[in-house]
Image 1 (cartoon, one colour):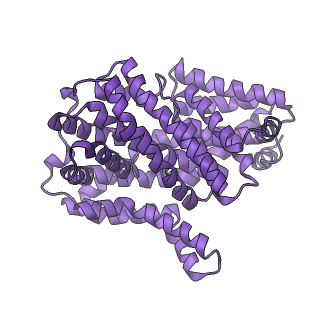
Image 2 (cartoon, rainbow, N blue to C red; image 1 turned 45 degrees about the vertical axis):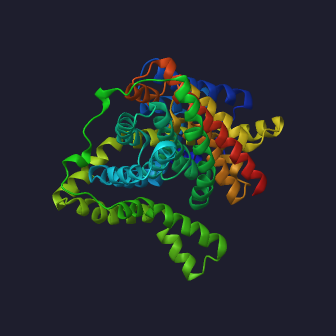
Image 3 (tube, rainbow, N blue to C red; image 1 turned 120 degrees about the vertical axis):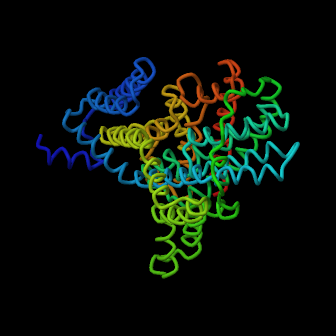
Length: 465
């Protein structure tokens, strides 16, 4: 088979690169996922390498020629990085500016100064949700946990009563709301409308974060009562700054890309005329690339210059923000390669047959697949990418709103029951000074609540829309 033929076959998702039956394809999918899980959990291999090897194993088990499997993987990797790579980079820059300028601390201090007593858990949800919009989950934890510890210490609050709402806010943003990598990749794979997904994601996120955060934290505080680990309270970034950005300017900068994308979605729905000049303008400024780029450019002044940063300091901040995301980009890219391999070996048709035979609603099927991969790999991003590749064919005949809900169903499933194979589990455990059992009772249960409540609201919306 020539390289040209391989590329043509790999590019055509409707024409599988193997003639394997559903039984063999099912075994191939399970074997490919098992290889990934085994390499990540047993051999501690980096997820990028595990996904690469798992994709090739999937092709081999499905009976596809090796050169065709390689072509599928590289095509998927390239298209995924092309689709979301720049967005992840821009999000990382905005997050780094927010952290280094003291803008994050300004948001925290302003809200906490106006909240006390029973309002404090709700304040923590608000802080985490706003700060969590442009930040990766791990970066959000590193930023927020010191604040949680200081609030609990100074205000004599239960650590779980304050900490669980903050974690819930971060986790919901991570799983359901673009521009986080998981939702972005799912939107790209399924072909969903980003603005509609963002709008519906916010609708699902609000009740979900309330139930999993302030409400659940009451029970978490009763189940686990741990003292504040003083050794984990570091010096805050803004303590070394002469000045920091204003509260209004900081919040406006963080919310700018969200507002631009929502405006685009609203105009698309109301005007619905591609030739209309207003819609053409909003289609440009509301595209994820332009919206995030605008926020970064505005942030250079409202965050960087407002904190007294020189041009050299701003340049250094931007440069240092990009290095840590190399691993994320590679994992996301390899996940896209795995997704493309799934499509090209014909798994999409198998899933369609399966959904018809079992009469499982597409949204629930997507959630169950994401749950299974999440439990196995421990990675919400890997679960989202893999599940999106598996169920993408189901979106072919869906309306715009239901395609968006399919993305949210996958995102909700990807958060189910974080346990010992999830890096976030250990991060939370160490920061809060809890045992494994205590972390399961609080963090793991909270993640499960987010996942279950999320899919319930997604299904309810599907009945209305």
